[in-house]
Image (cartoon, rainbow over all chains, first blue to last red; front, side, top):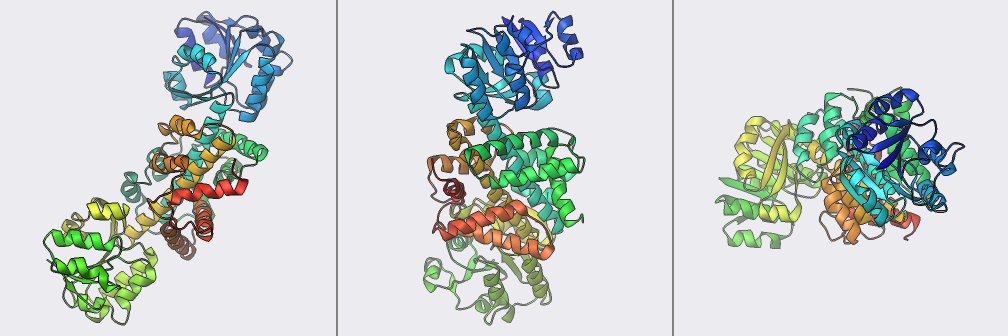
Length: 291
Length: 291
C-alpha cells in the first residue's frame, strides 16, 4: 500500500520503520531532513512538505507534538489540504485536543477525505517494539480499513467511537494516570513522614483496593528515588494542558486533574521536565521539607 | 486461649464469632447488650464493661468506630486500664489515628501490657468470610504470638512496622482509594461530557497504566449508576478526617486527599452517606449539571 508518514521524531520514526518493514511503500516528511535518512535508505521517498506526501500516499499518518502542529500539517501553507483528493485517509496518531480533532475531521470531510484520530500510549519502547496501545476515533468502516496497519504498530487497538473519541480516551488515560500518581505520592509521603517504611506500606496495599499499575510502576520509582522516564513530565504537562483546555471549552470541573497539572507545572519550573512524571512526589517532599 | 472482644458491631461481631468457632473461650462486651446474644448462646461470657473483660482475657481485641471510642475503651472510667496486668495483650483492630495509637501503646506499656494496632480492609463480607486484609503495627514478637488468631480473621496479614504502622498503612490505603476514585470519576465524567461512551473508554484504559482495582470496581459502579456499598461514604469520610488530622499534626501537605475529603463532606451534606464512596462521581456531575 502507498503510505505517508509525517513527523519522524522519537515516536514517529520507529512507527514508520515498522510500516516499512511490513512491506509498504512510504512517502515521508520530517521537519529535520536527517530524520528521514534511515527510511530513505530502505526505499522511502523523502518529501519536502506535507502537501507532497498528500500527492502520493493513499493513507497518511501524522505523529507530531501538539494541536497546532497537526493543524499546520493539515491546513498550513504546504499542508495536506493543498493536494488531498477524495478517498484518501488521514490518520492522526498525535495526542491533541479532541475538540480540534472534530473540527479537522469536518474540514477534511469537505474534501471527501476521511480521518481517524488514533493517539497511542506505550512510549518509545512501545513504538519500537510495535506494542503500543492505540485508541481510535472515527468511522467503523475506516477503522476496519486501517486496522491491519495499526496491527503493525501496536497490540491493544480499541475503536472507542466517532471522531475525537480516541483523543478523549487518551485524555482520560492521562487524567487517571496523573491523579493516581498524586494519590500514590501522597500516601507514600504520609507513610515516610509518619516514620513508617513506605516500601512495606506499598507491599501491604498492592493486592487490595489501593492496587494499581501506577502503585506498581510509579510507586517503585518513588521508593527508589529513580525518575528515569518512562513518560516525561514535559509531555504529561502538555497532555493535561489539552485536557484542561477541553474542560474549559466544554464546562467540566476537573479539580484533581487541575491540581496534578499544577504539580507538573511546578516540576517544569524546577527544571525537572525530562524526569518521569512519578517525580510529582518531589513536590510533596519539597512542600513540607524532606525528612 | 482466653480471648476478649470489645465492640460487636457490623465488623466486630462476625470477627468474634470466627474466633469462637476456632475454639477459643470468649469474654465479650458490646454497648448494646443484644449484640452479645449469639456469642453468649455459643458459650461466651457477657461482660458489663471493658474492665470486666480485662479481668479475664489474655488477649483482648477491640473493634469500635473511632479514636475517641478506643480511648474510652482503654482509658475510660470502666476501661481496660482499670484491670489490665503485665503480660496481657491489647489488639486494636479499629481504624483510628496513628498518632493516638502510639500514645495508647505507651500508656499500656507503663502497665507491662503490649499493644498491636491491626486495622483491616475488606468490609462486612471480609469479616464474615474471614478474608480481611490486616495491617499490623507493633513488636515482632507480639505479632508472631497473635498471628495464628489473625489467621482466623483474614488472609492478607502484613506486619508493617512498629506501633502505629498498621494505622499508617490503613490511612495510606484510604488516601489512595479516595484519590483514585476521584481520578476515575473525573476521567469518566470527561468522557461522558465529551459525548463518548464512557464504558468503552474504561475498556480501552483498563489494561494500561490507567488500570487499577478502583477503575475495575468503582468505575463499574459509576457506569452502572449503582452505588450500593461496598464501602460507605460515611466511613470513608471518617477515615480521611483521621488522615487529615494526622497530616495537620505532622505538618504534611496532602492536597488531593484533602480535595477528596471535601467531596465526601459534600456527599454527607446531600444525604448520600450510606452510598458507596464511588458516589464521588455525583459531585462532578452535579457541579457541571448532568448531560
